Length: 151
Image (tube, rainbow, N blue to C red; front, top):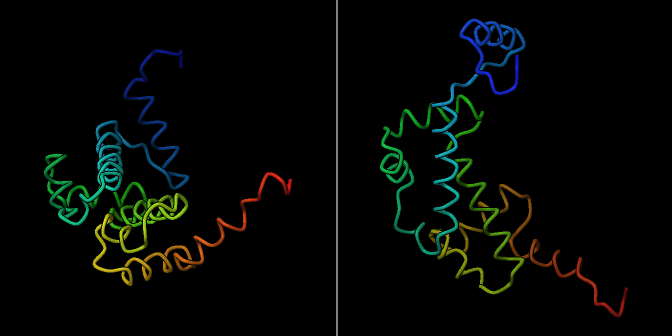
């Protein structure tokens, strides 16, 4: 196939057939764009301070993308191999890690900013995902940093 030339339906069909034999499949552009919009929307939501406590994820995505949440959820799970909720939790935990490393907010402020009902709820989810408590994770950062005089 030449660069810059769109494949024919026959070529796409042959490629899809070959991929299916290996356990894969082609995703059409529309579906991949929707999945990217889901990811982008979730990342934007997690990055906006204070938004998470007031938003229902399924309503937020359905409203932003103009599709029913059930469709979005099934599409995302089928293609990504994980649920929207697990992806959302993973993004929140990454944000918690970032905030812990910056060391500007207390755990209580982080929990509030990311829409957790309590520090205990944040800590439980953090430990479930990372295997570490937030406090222990934060202490690891301190051990990795060395004073310039010690180099």
